[in-house]
Image (cartoon, rainbow, N blue to C red; front, side):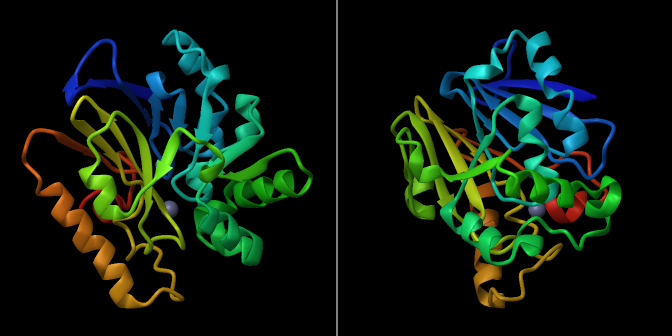
Length: 242
Ligand SMILES: [Zn+2]
């Protein structure tokens, strides 16, 4: 159900600093990124994938009970089902949570046809309303520090950081994991503003994000690796590439 890839300082390696889990049976599902040293999991994919995530992690010897669950944004194909992980708290940006509170269905992208299959968006909303899943701000995690986009890209100290890149969602979080001068950047769907543009964001704001990402991808200094939110996706050219 997941193809597993491990990365260590940008190279495929057995014991990875970053474990990338690519869903193979659900096209709309996002990739899942596991950062063992930081005890963090970025995005939970589609609920059908979250269901088998614990077994996948166990088979890799990953003790996921200790991990924090982070979401780049609250679209249904990234938030999965935290209850499958026995972890009722899902951390994302304060702005994403605010959007969820004020316009819940838009925040989880409920009007996208694939969100209707299995009523996955509705199920998440119902679980959250019943108190089974809690949303919390990334700012509640002192070891995950907020930066500006420029600050994120220039951070040199070991650690996990995030910045807000609006466009695809209202307050999409982009994560940077810095390990001894090497930066892994997890930009989720931030490049995919044209797939689901939030019309309340002005066009220039959305274009700016895309230009920022293009500039990031051009950094060929060998100290940078970017990861998109999706590998196997019918919308791949829009979501993963820029
Ligand atoms: Zn999305």
